[in-house]
Length: 98
Image (cartoon, rainbow, N blue to C red):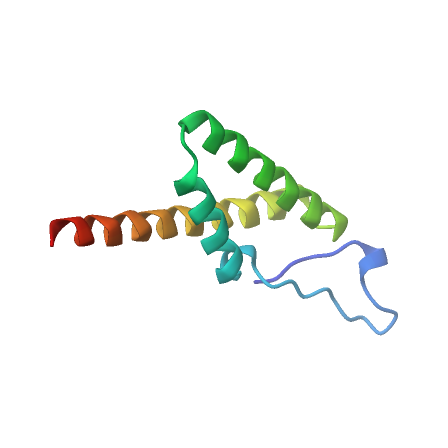
């Protein structure tokens, strides 16, 4: 993934900021998915998701990433969270079938 940075985010030697993609933060993806599954209503889950989204946008903005890159990163993160939620429910479904 190529991420353009602001001028003040690059070194004098022409180096660029390299960010680990949000969707690849497996521990964080699992933690957010588990927290969403544990919520007792859609409303509380939506509030939690919104707060996590805001946190990620603040983190990326602090790195100086463009808004379109932030949108892609946060979207990819929540796609990974959704896949993890599906995996959790799939595992629970399989256990309940036995």
